[in-house]
Image (cartoon, rainbow, N blue to C red; front, side):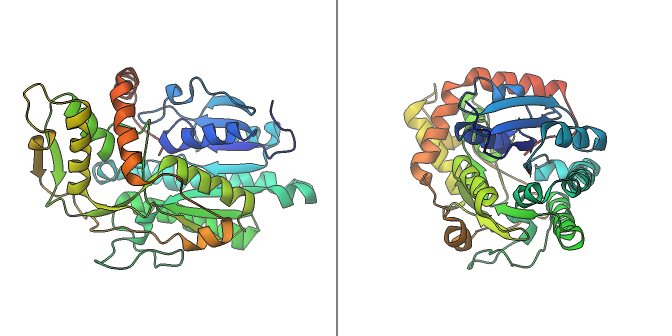
Length: 355
């Protein structure tokens, strides 16, 4: 049964990978959740199927650029928290078609902020004290690291791709809506997420599904680009803590403390697959690795120091990478019907997606 004393949450992009994981967590904690998602290539109703818990879930198919829809939902549902996952999030797509990223990630965030402000200004003092707007961002806004050091909350913003530039713009809009208008805004930035239900074009599910199907495993450049990996469930725990305990105008970073070179990551996935699903020809899965032309503007290394979130929010990771990546490989092996459904839906939809 939903706890009426808990904040009611509007989750945009809640049918996407990270968004749906957050919905699962919020429902398990007793929150009433309203999901708004456009259901395009990376947002799928199947990600929300079978959810249960003491909380309640309502789904609305819609666009965060629709100011009337967002305004109506905020007022009708008496929302306490807004968390914005809705975004175009794949760097390769941003290089090929940046206009869509500008529309969703910047204009969509502007629309959501404007509707949230209008709603916030009409709340009672108690309602205003409770209200929070959380902008979910990425470590890619910081650009590329050298061989040492980690990003922290106040690292300089130096985006290098159309995707990261659009997310940086959204962050700055959110910050401005707090400083100019007093909207209680929190910004979070995370390292690369992994786990179940990630759209198959992303690195980890792409390597797993390609291996299962006997395809080549494309690795950009020399494969030495480094990413820090956080399990999606740990990230979502951090997001809920930021809403519960975070200070308006604060930025909180969440990392996995699991830096991996892309090539090493792919080989680790292949090693698990060699044991769990050997190739019919007896060859190791990593024999299918193929180095391809590097991506334009490919950042060399990301890594996050989340000590501030640990200290101020009490953030703790529950998943270590070694067991987490094995469990992820197992999930994809056991959920071929989900993969087929996602691919079918994606083929029928284009346009705005969800992170």
